[in-house]
Length: 482
Image 1 (cartoon, one colour):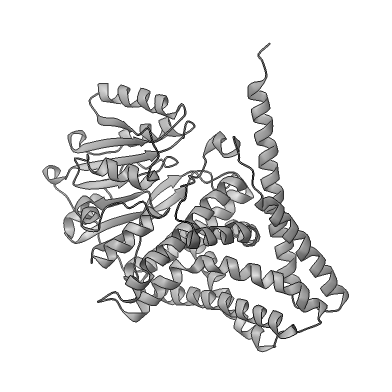
Image 2: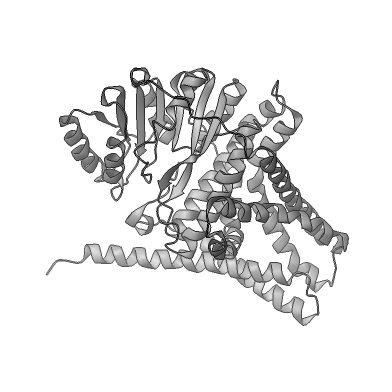
């Protein structure tokens, strides 16, 4: 019996170390390629191509008008710019969007609202529906929470005119509310690592680069050639990106073009976002794993990196197994082999990237690192939710695209979430295990168990707080006006 739990501990720790080692690989590639760049080509005034900007939205009343206002202020020849508001909403978002669209259409903008009465196919189907009507040679996509800078198109479109095989370009996401709370600060650290390090590595080393779903540009021909937007995953961006790579389209990442967006402000909204990304990555791994491994013309290192990156959410399962194994190990007074501590050093690979990204992006990077502990705790706290999403990605064929709520919508009409009970129970489990370990003089798992107790406890309590706030808002909205 002892060997079973110790075996689970060892296997989980080695698995986590493997993905930590992937961080060291990314570090080496980043240091090797970070100074590689393509100079922005110059475009004569009469040579700008037609562009369609697509704005996929669903029930976004708090941000829809801000989004449309920001798009019509883009610095681009008006006669060459088409704007599509791809609206699947079932609330007042549609009327708010229509007001904006009608107003700007009257001013001469080529803008229209394309409303679907059904969410069939979710975001992917909405994008495909818009693509079939699009007039532009290039397709630009912004989600509802983005506020792009006016020069976005002039800083991105020229790259496509320089290289006819360039299929997609991704800009770096910025943050409108980076330091609003510890939660948004933690998200900033996580996203900055992805964009400032991982995207540079993927694109410049040609390790299956990807489009992030928003703040990017596609050549319309590349989308069509790669099979269009497909609705059988909840990560339509990763799905299309993988197919485009397999069809030998090139990608480019511009780290100096920043498109600010609003970060989720509640733990419930953040859990929803992360669960969707987790489920979608799992679905894409099932869909394309074999094709990636057998991809002609791609190096072994590129294929391995792509598969490990796509499967990285499995670390959530490993964290849960590691935590669940601790109580039996403590009660049996078993001690994992000492060499495992040496292997665990590989786990530092990912934290180093978080720090490096902050240093690369901000002059006050040391101050911003105060959000790093919160990020680690939240990451552990999300393990149950993300594990559930992995299982759904492996087994579910009938699924719903759960969009990330913005503004007030992040705490209104929240469904029952039984995972809060699981998170709270796991927090108590880890706390009891920690006390037992300390009482028995076993200090080895103390840091892990203390972190898990805090992380799981925070996520569960914050989730309960969101539901209390939601209940109060609903009660307030139903009270008669005196």
